Image (cartoon, rainbow, N blue to C red; front, top):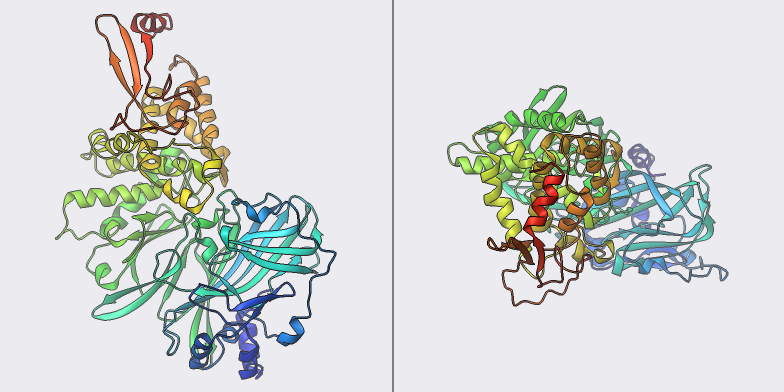
Length: 632
């Protein structure tokens, strides 16, 4: 079990924390370039580096002892090296750690996570670190003697342990190694885990608090001429593994219990309301321990944390507490007032639109000086670039206000499309981003009816979709899962196709289905897959069900034959009508018709016919068929 803060304090009072403990504790190379430990006998063993050692001694006591982030070792390095794996434990021949996707044998249930970001330089080393301890509870779905879990740039400071959830007995570990090519931490067990049983994986570690805008990172800013630091997270798409060892795939949802230690003059905010706050004295210095309520079941990339000296304004709207956070001078200047004014109305608009209530009791909106994207939709804690949340009415134009509202509505839509229901794998990221983009325009128009949807959409998203999808390097909205396996492939899907073409296709479907039927299908989709994941065919099925359950709107064919051609292949057609013969032809439109398209279509080409070839339709026959169906 994690060493609790109370245990740390009691150890200190009992005089059991001393320099000998510091010598025995593990150490961390905060550069992230390599672990400062070696694997001996299946366990990570600490190896000192002079730089980190100097930093710890400059602080006065070992950082690990202060926080309880590494247990006091009872054995010397020499004793640990004698823990050799038994010869009868053979390495599995299938080698699932070579795959870019986790094996399906384990499924997470809960993460108990304790974090301490150091927003100060360690002595003369100039390093910024964060320290962590995690307990992952997981269920075994298939008998296995392997635990494969994501871990990146984390240095383990004590043996990683696996225990049975029933009797807390330890499962012996034969070998541990890091498979860096796929960001895996791999544990080979001496005895297999049993199907249906619950287990825990316990780890203590540290990492660097970088300024790289990923994982848990630091931001430096000035306020009233004073330089300050904050810690903030950006986990999407695959950076939760930089903060704690986890099953970092969107379909592997779980709950989270988060504890954060920070200075008393700082605030810690996360996805959930604060459960308890207490003081902790370490070597005469006061710290604050903030414990948050357990989260809803969600994907790892949605876990969020901000530790800062920010100020906030707040209001409660229909039972939900809204806070807008930012630099003190900006909040006091009223730059958060507009966001707070529209937040409650906007969230209620989407709850009514989707006929599903927002499931949390609070919503924190935080403006950060340095942030990778315009906004990040973490459940209950949305993080923005300052320009996308704060508004200075004296300096900024109405177009800036409209852009801000668009981002706000985009992130609010994600509370349903992305958080409540998440795409099963990243190849369907448009199910998150396409919906958020489309409904952001509706939310924008709701806030200010003068901002009409159609002209704004056509000039922004539709135009971007046409431009990007006319390139030979475009891709389908839903490419095959096999094509999307590396971090690079995943990151490349956060583009105009997923956002703007996705929104354009949804707008088209809403138009020919009617908005009422479209929303009815979406509500069914959201309700069936709440706290779960879905793919494109799940969405299409629910839209088809909405069509099947009424008689007012009749399509010339089923929805799959229409929608699949827009989602499962790239590009769009240019249509030519011969007004003399009535012949209609269509051809894959490319901005440069001489470029070579290498991607094949499941339909033998784009829309119909091979890529670059024309497909034909007699307009008279088409009109006749529509007349028979009562459409003309």
